[in-house]
Length: 213
View (cartoon, rainbow, N blue to C red):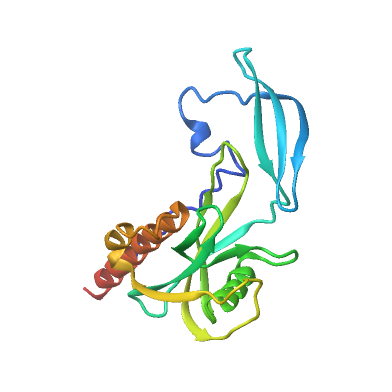
């Protein structure tokens, strides 16, 4: 059986793969930072930067508690995945995506993933394993999301904070090209997570078949 590749943590260890590239650039110096706007959910921070070539620029970014977030590829059987339909205020429309949510204070990502599944899909998972860590718009925020594969599901519902019940749909994970043709399925993190999960499952099936030979 093949050994899985080592986990990459390029967010917290920039000396990793990207840092080893030829000609890796020196990070700019932060000359000043200040909060320029704040709402109930978001804070906008201004950064005065000096780059290694002497150029100075002012950047803006969204900041927050940075508690972390989880997104789950929950599979009721080896061939299907659970998707939720929820209202996306940014698009002013309903979208199809994977269940996800913030990590509460004191939670680890496994506990958070299981809780969110119970709140959004009405199921828990006996087995949850991390797949990958993804960023969202890294030019503007530090937000990171842990993607986890959840299997061996069981019925369990917890009250959540959604304003209305979410619609849960079951889709074949091998039908991703058809999903991409839908106008309501376009969240990049969900698409990446599903392809990563699909490839992991394919690799596991190939390894299992090889072991039987």
